[in-house]
Length: 198
Image 1: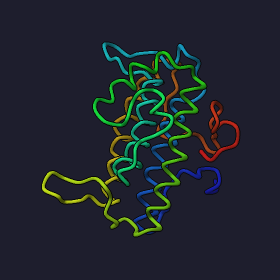
Image 2: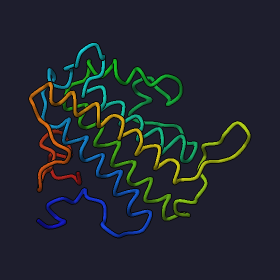
Image 3: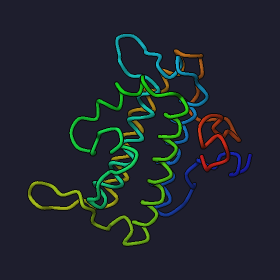
Image 4: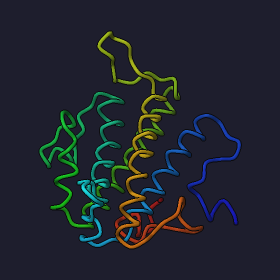
C-alpha cells in the first residue's frame, strides 16, 4: 500500500504544521466517507432520540469551517453562501442542523465540499503569513488574541466530536462501519466526487 492509496494519512514524521493539518484532513476525509453517497432519506436518518442527522452534520461542519476561517481568523463577514441563507455567522448554529432537512443531498455535499476548499485556501494563506504562531482576529474579553494553532485545534476537536456521531448514524443507515476509508477511496457524491481533492 502506498501513500497515494491513503492520501489522508498524516505523515509518520513531519513538522507540527504537517501533523496538525494532516490530522484535520484525516478527520475531514473520514467524516466525508461516513456521509458519502447517500440519498435524502439516508441523510435525514436519526438514531434513537437524537435529532442529529448526517445531512445536519454536513451543514454544521461546513458552517464551522467557514466560521473559523473567516470571522475568527480575519474578522471578515462569513459571506456566501451563508448570507443568502440569512445567517451572518453569529448566534446559534442550530439552524444548520434543522435547515438541512430542506436541502437536497447535492446541496449538502456541495456546501461541505466548498467550505472545506475555502478553509484549506484560507489556512494555507494564514500559514504562509506567520505560521501557527500568527495571531488571529478571535479575541478574549480581556483583550488577549488567539493564535492560528488554536483555530486549527478547535476544528480538529469539532470534527473529532462529530465524526463519532457520523459513525453511529452511518451504521444505522446501511451498516457501514470502520475507522478509515478503504485504500483508494474517493467521494462518489457531490463536487468532490467529480475529481476534486478529498
